[in-house]
Length: 393
Image 1 (spheres, one colour):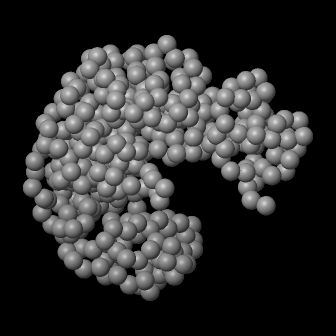
Image 2 (cartoon, rainbow, N blue to C red):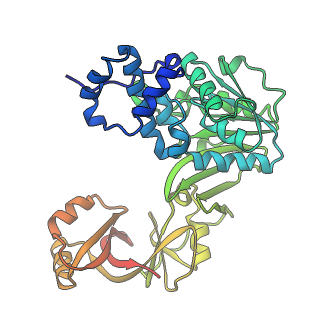
């Protein structure tokens, strides 16, 4: 017998019986769902129990993006959880809109309403539009659950049919998932990126959320392209219109540090120095490794590898620094002997430009002992190399 599926059946969940079920299921163990469902169906309608279990599971998944306080008050669809913006990123973007003087935003393809909620909390009036009736109903319920329905109007409509001329700005978050998973071709988004760009050009300000792997050549010259990471994980890219033609920016949350492109050539390749810097993923995606290297007075270890080397330790929010103790040609037997000699039992393995998987390295070298080290599997001037070190500072 299979596990209970995610079943979205919103209306009855908003009533007293549904709310009581959701409260009871807040901390339920998904591994015990079948037994739990059997017990609950003795006291509640089967459809309501299935809907409550599915919604409880979606809320548990949503905690990572929205935090427990909001997630356990909100409602979700399965696709909505997957595609929702992390709350910290949505709040940052809403703050950018307020800095531009924006007081009203048309949120097109609003999904479960996460971005509309962040905009409303920033004091912005929002028209949230989605063509799927259930998704629009969920977004409406979320605005009400969080006390923001006075600032958020939800409309079920095709975004192409909505008049947005009365709004200060547009935010468009096209669907980037289909029946077969993630969609990588921007023209296969729903709506296509070309449509979203056309809509953005009609507004004073606009922000288009796109996948962080968007090719740079697909970014319009009129747009500012911003890559955003949160706690080191790249979350999204945003194409801004009305904020700066052709700018490239990497923004690192939660600190909010921002690195802007200066049109620098690729850094020179240098011999490995005392320190190795691993740039944040947003810096790499934004093609701003040269700017980070210049700030560090550093160079690259290989022309194709985004590791920066330098002889001095400098504080930077854009990269993590490591002190390098050893540089060896790639040889796992030699690595195993060195780690045994130094009694390294806590081993972090990082790779860039190497086909060897970190788990394979750990399995073969069998680290043991009280000490810690970091191993970088990479290339130095084209040669497969192992760099051994530890976090600097």
